[in-house]
Length: 165
Figure 1 (cartoon, rainbow, N blue to C red):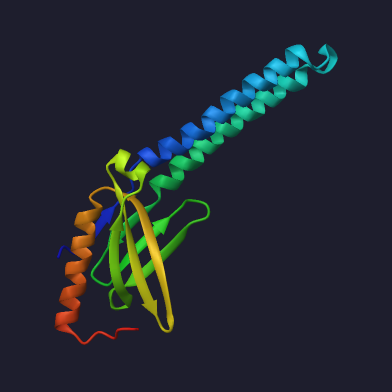
Figure 2 (cartoon, helix red, strand yellow):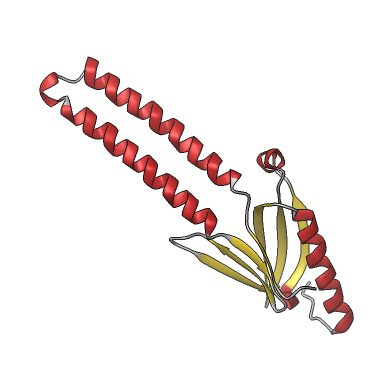
């Protein structure tokens, strides 16, 4: 197995999230500007332009935040563990050590199938607790699952691994 493999999620999901917000922003801007020209008195009409400008700025900041979030999200497979880092501000990192992995599965949602990606679901047993880690929008998710299954099988054959039931 190579020393380290890093996989990034498909950028299409960031684009979809940005598109959803931008559609709302455009509708909101048109609604604010329409209200400013038809409903709000002309003396305070400048507030509608300010509201539209603030909504536009919020959409731009959201787009930047989404791009930074997805560019700092990755799955790294090392010889010691699987490291899943997601986010920019705030960011979280899951270190899933090989001996704690109980099972691994893959799934594909409708959105993921449109993007040609999928999710891997890792079942982790840690002390007396079992939890799942779902890592989505990964290209070649089946190959990643096979790689992890092969690594788990090699560990089980080479050492006596503690299993939790």
